[in-house]
Image (cartoon, rainbow, N blue to C red):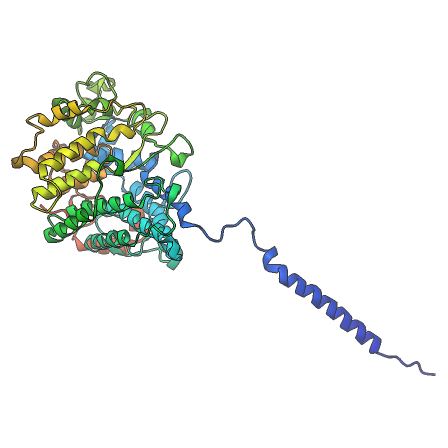
Length: 509
């Protein structure tokens, strides 16, 4: 008798297994994305949270300050003088790699991106949300502040495509002409100011400069536009006047309360001011004899703040002298930057644009016959008064000059406004007010020829004793973006070996 097998129970079992496996598989698939997502990983970044970091990065750290602003530019404009022969040689050779990488690539112990990347990222992220219009506008303004310093040093630089590698994977951005950059920066400032909206989210405490005060942001932007407009006074006088008068009418800084500066503290490394370490702890610099002799000969009360001495020093350190001449001097007896501007607590503030500069800009505008609120003399004197009192923000109780001291200073024949040499007076006073911000006095010296710097020819320099008029593109760019560097140099018919004496677009004889 044959045994009959039925496959129905087996088929039922198979279906049950398949169904069970399918349910299990669907359960795993439903939770697969959640299980494989890092719950602590950031997927979106609030641009507001990046803002104060960008401002602190703009202020710079020890590496950027020592290797460029102080070693090179502040010595070029004869605010400082290097104490060692090595720095004397580097003074004219410069260190473009440090400055370029600080702005574009980023560097330092904390390894954060460059300031350009921060600024670009804030603008791009803030564009995504209409409620962030104030963050967007402030970001656009700060981006202009960053880029005008870059292009003033190097001339044609990556601008429109810069800092966008994360978005478009373009790591060889084209070098835009300085003319195109300047005209776009002026446009950006106009549009950003117009777009501020007090009904939308503001920057609040994430803004290390103005704490979200939109009135002060507008004044800062208009003051920056005035600075840029005056830069064009020779290359495009009509545009310079139009933009300057428009910026002034829109409202620039009114007093020292509007000054753009950031308070730095003895906390995390990015918050600290390394001016003390750079200027005093390393002990590589003294005040320039050019600078000290002018302040001392005019009984300038600011010298006690800048030098931090109760007795005026006899002299500073001459720029451009030989190693043998340096060894013959006792550097310990020469003037150095004091603890108000270079605090050992690393809490000295960084000033981005002082109110005094804005008054000096308006003084020059009035001198040129442009429309300003007051006369050239009145703006000039207001600039001096602002500069005399701007150091009240500094630590260690600086001896701020009294009204009587300021009046006596202004009344001196060499200082009192004189139409015959007013431009030299205005720019020289601006040079004093911008002490330790080497980049801006350097730009103004190239534009105007003032102040009158001493002719130097230190051993090892490559300019034949002439003050360089721009910085050299760094080697990294010549290696990784050679086509764009070649194109930029070709526009002014120079090569990387004589770039120091080539004028940028706005720099005219």
